[in-house]
Image (cartoon, rainbow over all chains, first blue to last red; front, top):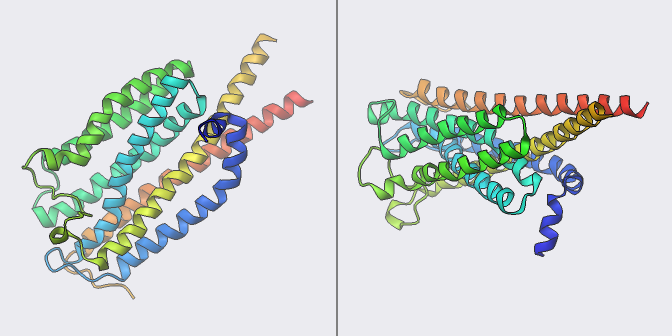
Length: 244
Length: 50
């Protein structure tokens, strides 16, 4: 099982398998995301406190979830690179970053738009919001570091270390509201506590939307890794031509 | 068909427009780069194959 998992770290094998998977994942991402957002936007009632702004949850929560999950995936991929030197894992971390930064931006913007009528402010230096903003800056720094270094192995090493450091803020953006009993941001939207649970009419489309955003992430990372493998092959060909 | 979003029409539509706009830009950017790199590699391999 373990040895078969590492077969996918071989770029040729990865290209074969991902090429077969990609149309299905991309199709499912489109259908499930559209279903979740249409359900949430058109077929859910207003909340008795939030009114129609409750519909923002169907873009805000899935984006925030993927902003954190993308960084966790980058951390795991970076650790695999650092420990086992599998190039595909380093490229997977690189490919996940643009998706993660976009998800973070969506979460920050949609949260601000929701916050203005509900909290009376677009922004507050609340623990979760601040941790999210720092996570956003870490994403930008991570991508800038990849772009700044010519040697891909050195870039993978250094961005791997940056990813480890940034993980503190990824965790804080998830758990900050539990660490500190202060700030405007409420607790988990999908609490398991019976009294705090979101009503099922909102929870079901939210689950669908979250699944859709997850599939978008997987599809885009697969495309991104395939692109990075091709770019790497191109660099190798250029080097070979120069040496010939 | 369109739900009544009042008095938060601008906020809800704004949040969805921003989210879908950013997602669209991301997907477009990823696909454009994928196509460009694939074309360049194909050209390079074609040149080498000659």
